[in-house]
Every structure is written in structure tokens, then in C-alpha cells.
Image (cartoon, rainbow, N blue to C red; front, side):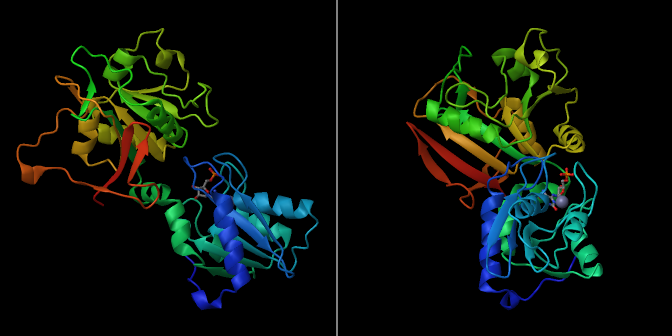
Length: 350
Ligand code: AOF
Ligand code: ZN
């Protein structure tokens, strides 16, 4: 990658423009693609921003250049700031390096390098083409913005979020199998928001058969949210032809018992963020395989007695073998109240 620039070399206006780009990035969709924002800073201190809206849509650089053209801004003396190194590849859209050159922009600042081997190297390409290229401005903020995507890229497997909704005594269903609804409406809405930010949701065939879930993301009004995850079912049992998942042409059934193989397959399918919703044996398999990155646990204030454990089948016989998690509030509060429930956010050891 390109050399990092000494932070002292950036002006206050450049810093402000990168902050604006970071804020614009947050308007994007967190899914298979990173959140990326861009800004154009002109001689007279004007700042315009753009962002990437999700896979298949224009990259942030192209978005902000389009806006600048629409506003009649002179780009021949402008600086383009972008939260991620401009891509160099022909992907679902063209290379941003080309768009920047074609726009005649002489100076580029990016926050963090692009770790994607397909897309990286754009900084060097622009420098070789004679542009002034600097990097590292608000580097940590840019990294924090895409922590899940960066982890997925680095590990070459999807970032795995586990969702558990349970009673105080750790049950996800009562003894007779009844499970609707243990958690509150507020908790369920929150869980649907998470669904709308992931690429895929995975359940086992057991859950698919017992609950007939839709695995889509819905608002509190019951309407589908803008971004829908891909439903994934793990296991060999056939789904009933009339079930929601069998009727959804996007459903992917993975007929493997190995969760490691399953996530590898999902990565090649383009999944960068996977939400695992159960059931209890699937959760145990993910924990045992060490491929859980994050847990959202919705804890409802009720006891279910002889219920079904939320995680079932962990081979832990003694305290020293316990699997440890830690409360984490780098991005969301580690502990929050959702109506009558408590939401806990954990990460696993890295
Ligand atoms: C940029 N600007 O706004 C984004 C970039 O699927 P594609 O073709 O859109 O390419 C996605 C890859 O491009 C993604 O994995 C990452 O490496 C880079 N994303 N690059 O110059 C952007 N979103
Ligand atoms: Zn690009």
C-alpha cells in the first residue's frame, strides 16, 4: 500500500472534509460491501459529500464527482477525500482510479488502505499517474466504521453475529416447544434492524421445520425493510414445499453438517456478514468451531423452567473449559434496555 502521511501535514479543512466523508459513509448500507464516504474540497473551502449505497451501486468517489459536476464545481484544483483507498478494479462498477483521473482531480486523500486484494493498489496507481496522494487521515475512525468487513476480509470468512433471545434461565422455548414470544416487541424490532444490515441469516433445518420462519427484515409495521438478507438453511432435511423458506427463490440450503464448510461456501457466495439465529444445536456448533465474532443476547424477564436451552451441545465439562465472551460497547452499547428486556452485546476473544 501507499505510505501513510504524517498527520501534521493535513490542514484543518482537510480534516473537516474527511469527517464529513465519514459521516456520509454512515448513510450507506452495511452489508457485503464496506461503508465508504467521500468529499470534495475546493480552494474556497466548499465541501460536498457522497457515499456508497451498497453492492452494485456507484462507489463513493463516483457519487461525489457526479454531485460536484451537477453543482458546476471546478475540479481542476480540488482535493478528493475518501474514507477507503480508491479501488483499482473493474467490479460491479468501474475502477474509481479511472473516474478520478477522468474528472481531472489533482489531489487525493484516503483514510485507510483497501485490504481487498481485488481492489487495492489504487493509491499507487494514482500517484504514478501524477496525482498528489496522501493517506491516513482519520485512519482509526475509518477502520472502526468497517470493523466487521475488515475482519471478514482479513480472515477470508464472513463476520459471524449470533442472536440469542432467551428467558432469564437461558431457555428459547418452553417444555412443550412454545416459543412465541419470549422477548418483547422492542427486542424483536431491534433484531429486525440487525437483520437488515447483514448479508445472510442462517438457521438449521430444525428451526426451519418447527418455526417456518421467513428470515426477512421487517419494520414494526410488518412491512419489509429496504435491505433483505439472504436466507440460508443448514442441514440435509428437505423443507416442506409450502414453507416460507422453500417458496423463497433466494433461499440457499447448505447440505453440510460442518459449519466451517458452510461459512467458507457463504464467503464464496459473497457473504461478508452472517447472522446466525439458531437453533440451539447450530449455535453450539458455531461456538465449538470458534467462528462466532459477536453475540446479541436479548434477555427477557421470565423463567421457563424445563425449557429448551438457547445453546445445546457444547462439550464443556469443567469451569476452566468455559467459553468466554466480553461485553463490548465500541459500536453499540454493551448493555441496553428494550422495553422489559435487556440487550447484551458481546464479542468473543480475538
Ligand atoms: C471504492 N469506493 O465506495 C467502495 C469501494 O462489488 P464492487 O465492484 O462494488 O466492489 C466492492 C469492492 O470495492 C469492495 O470489496 C472494496 O474493496 C471496494 N469498495 N471502493 O473505491 C467505494 N465501496
Ligand atoms: Zn471504487
